[in-house]
Image 1 (tube, one colour):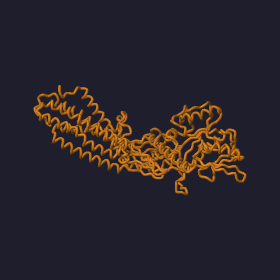
Image 2 (cartoon, helix red, strand yellow):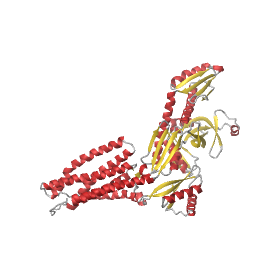
Image 3 (spheres, one colour):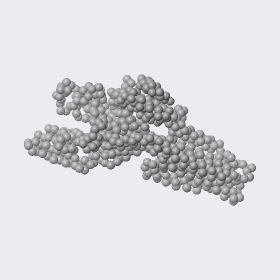
Image 4 (cartoon, rainbow, N blue to C red):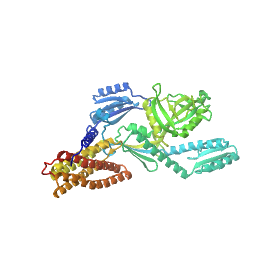
Length: 621
């Protein structure tokens, strides 16, 4: 029978309607202004902290919607932005420096919707607000680290070739050079003959005046430029990894000039955590602990040239060997967890080269102590002579453990204060240690008020366009126009639902433009179908045959038009950036959903109302 759908098609359409309504629904609930409290290094967020927070809020006559301790953080939902700002001021003043009190937005989606994966649309920086960071890479430190690496490489090369030397250290008269000292000219010449061919990017200058036999090895201008470019590119790549770890949708991470990086994080109000993760330069070094040197002698200055004294976080001095067994550059994965005693730890996985180094060292040092050195760079708030920010290098022993057996590519770091610190350390190590310290020199928080105005204007444009189309279709195509209008409304719901389901999909201002454009385009398919039905009726065919051939014959035209537009949207997404991609995403989704609703959706309604009926004398179209 013409124009009759089997039951399964109606069930499928009903399932699509229900699913779309469910996943679009979270956008109706909005978000609550909230305060997020997390601990800085060395502090813990506990139940006692929660009790204090509730007492401080009560004293300030603030009544939050809810206060919850979850995953080592306290989330306080408030009724208005004014209460949010007051609450932050009260809590910041009372909790002290041990805690970070940050503004946040907490979704109001009901728990039953969250349980099935329902969540509101991710909004871009232009709609939701967020943070903008301008970061500066410390190129002086990048060059200094390259010098340190050159010192280690030259020592290793000379030892392997059994060329004796008196010392290898940074050249005090050169910003990029290393000074090598030898006992005689023969050893100096042997060193030059071996080192020069394998280090083509360095200048070799010997100095045999005043009875000394010195060799200066310095970077060429090209090598210096390459070192700085490498530091910037690596930091750029690592920052992208860290942003991905933060779970921010549609972030922007790009270079600016020769030593700066721009980072934009839409929707992020917890700027403290973002700054802590993005600006962190934490890394690890593994050293053999010097158990042969007496600690009192070391503190009195009687220390072997091969050893150095560091302190652990409790201020206890520890003597370790200068030679680095392994650096954090070999870490490929790091996961936080707890040990058998419930203490925080970080499980480390190394690459093959790092695993080999660790295996060789631990094989010959079973029963001896090994120290884990934690290194981070912190801003001092001061400026250098060149106007750039000064950064302080902080080093401390994270733990000293006795090597019980030969280690491979996997082991663990203990001695951390809490799970939050373990989580952040794991995140930083997993994303990669920055090649050079980085400093946030400009920070802008973009409030959601401008974004809300953009949303309101976009929604108004869509509503006005929708009303114009609904009125036109209802007048011109009568009852069939009402069917098209129903499909059009369902199409908008489907676009919102699909974008909410797709991980990482973000609605931007150009994305709203894409939806508005889709609203206008979505009705085109129905216009083609309805006009074809009218033609068939004018040709004298029966009502049922006209409906059937109207849908059948218009399909190829609709498919051709939409496929060409879809290809354009895919190209825009592939070659575009930022806002262009936002437009392309909503356009592509809108094309696919409009084809579904315009062809399958309206056909199901038409079949349900007019299909298979021989008593219809006139069609309202």
